[in-house]
Image (cartoon, rainbow, N blue to C red; front, side, top):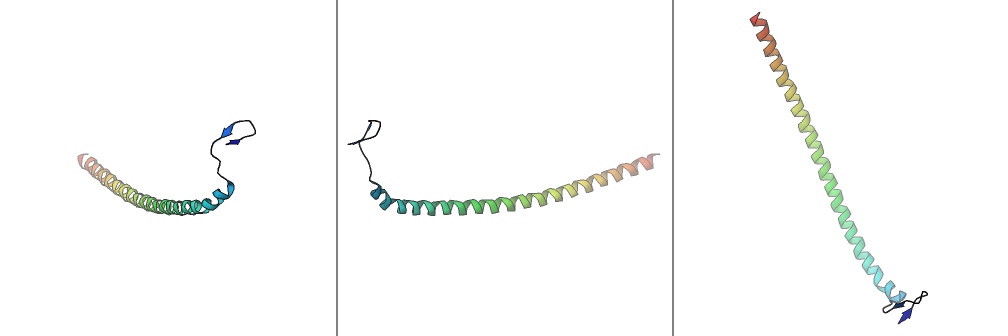
Length: 85
């Protein structure tokens, strides 16, 4: 049993030398896992950027089509007004 400075007791205390023996393996595993997650995040970012570019292109195409349709409708209405007077 180990007693702390405030008088409380600790039933299990791990010596520092035991921690240093297991810590590097744990940290290496954690590092590999973090690298894997980072790689996945980068892949998601690339995918999202490609999706945004695609959507921007589609939006521009749709906008151009809408303008062309409005232009056609305006010309038709102008022609009809000119023919009826």
